[in-house]
Image (tube, rainbow, N blue to C red; front, side, top):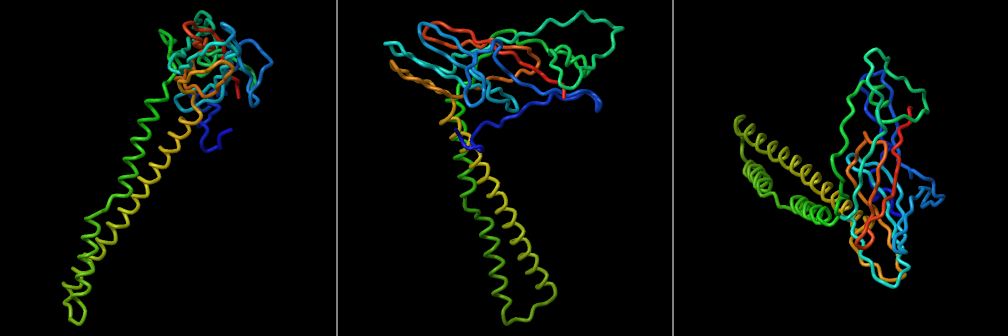
Length: 280
C-alpha cells in the first residue's frame, strides 16, 4: 500500500453551492450490483471474459480526475496484454422530471441520496449535458515522461549559478574593502550601503526562487514516481499471472452512473458503477 504522500490526492468531493444556504453533497462511487468482493475496504465490480477475471473498485476523486483500481487475473494458458489506454467509460443519468415552473426547489433531507438532476435543482444550477461519446482513461506513459522532464528542468533551475547575484556580492565586497582606512563622504557611504543592500536583497530573493524550483522539482518527481509504481501500465500477463494498478479517468460529477469498459484481448467487458451524492 503506497505511503499517504504518494497516493492520489483523494477528495470526497463537495458539489459547490449556488448560494450560502444551498445544500451540499458528498460524492461517491460504488458498483451498481453488490458483489461481496472487497479490496482494502473498497467493494469491487467483477466481470469474466474468456476465463479472464477483471475486478474494478473506486479509489477516490482528484481535483479533475476520478481514480479506480483495476485488477486482472489470467488463469488461461495464453498471454494477455492489458493496456490502460484501452479503458473507456460511458456516463449515464437518471431522467430528470419534466420542468414545472410552479414547483418549489427540492430540499432533500440530510443523509438523503439524490440524483444529479435533483441535486442541481436544489442548488438552482443548470444540469450539464452528458459526454457525447465514450471517454477514454488517461495513458500514464506520456504523463510520466512529461513529469520527469518538468522535474529535471525545475531541478536545473534550482541548481543554476546566479552570476548576477555573485557579481553584486563581489561589488559589495569590493566597496567595503575600498572603504577600509579611508574617510568616506556621506555620499560615498550611502552609495556603498545601497550596493550592499541591493546585493543582500537580490540574493535573498534569488535563494527563495531556487527553493521554490527545488520544491517544485520534488513534487513533480514524487508524482512521476507514484504513477510509475502505482498506475496500471501496459503489461503482458503470462498464464497464471495477475496485475493491479490505478486507472485515471476525467471526472464528471453530473452523471448518475458509469459503464466502464475493460479490455480483455480483442473484446471488452462492462463494469457498472453508480455515482451517488448524499445530502450533507
